[in-house]
Each structure stands twice: as structure tokens, then as C-alpha cells.
Length: 147
Image 1 (cartoon, helix red, strand yellow):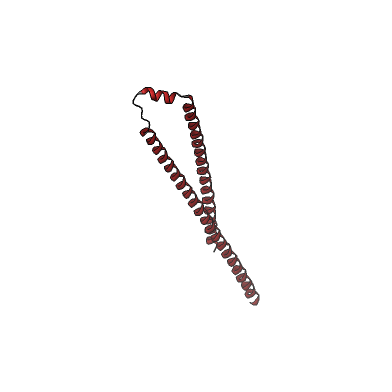
Image 2 (spheres, rainbow, N blue to C red):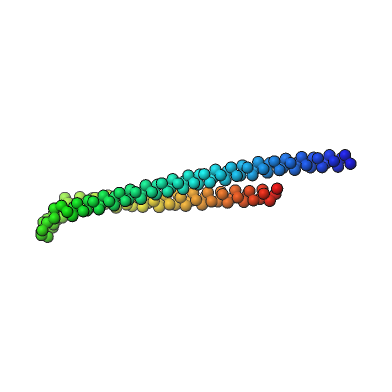
């Protein structure tokens, strides 16, 4: 009888130890999931801030372009077509306009590429974090099922 009691006590101690280990693993998984959620939230906030700043910059540039075009339209309005032709037809002006246009196109292409890169990075980060969170939830579910 005492031998059975000793075996039961050993079994109870073993189960208590396993339970404590499972609780420790669960707590670690919960902490890890919380950490990943914080990182995801921080990353998402950063992306939103960057997008907002980029949108503000775009709006500022649009306003500048509109202001410049209106000031160009309001100043030096020739009354005949000939002065316009003379002004546009000058090689220096055309070359300057072409150079400016090239700069604008290069900048636009660079910004589009940067935007695509940021979108791809954000999507990858979201997939990675979602996967980690899902794995953590699965692990927690399994641990809960064992208890």
C-alpha cells in the first residue's frame, strides 16, 4: 500500500512539474505574441506616417505647380501668337524645359519605385507577422488542449 502511495505521489509531482512547464511555455508564447503585436503595430504606424507625409508632400508639390502655372499664365500674356512662338522657339528655353521635364520624370519614377518597394516590404512584414501570430495561437491552443 505504501509503495502505491509513493508511486502516486511521484506521479503527482511529475504532473505538477509538467503543468508548471506548460504554464511557463504558455506565458512565454503569450509574451512573444504580445511582442509581435507591438512590433506589427509599430511597423503599421510607421508606414501610415510615411504614407501621410508622402501624401502631404504630393499635395504641396501640386499646390506649387498650380501656383507656378497660374503665375506663368497671368504674367507675360502676349496678345498675338508670334511672341509666344518666339519665346518657346528659343533653343535655351526648350532645352531648359526639356531638362526640367526629364528631372521631373526621373523623380516621379524614383518615387514610384520607392512606393512599390515600401508596399512590397509592408506586405511581406504583414505576412510574416500574421504567420508568427498564427503559429503562436496554434501553439497556445495545443498547450491549452494538453492542460
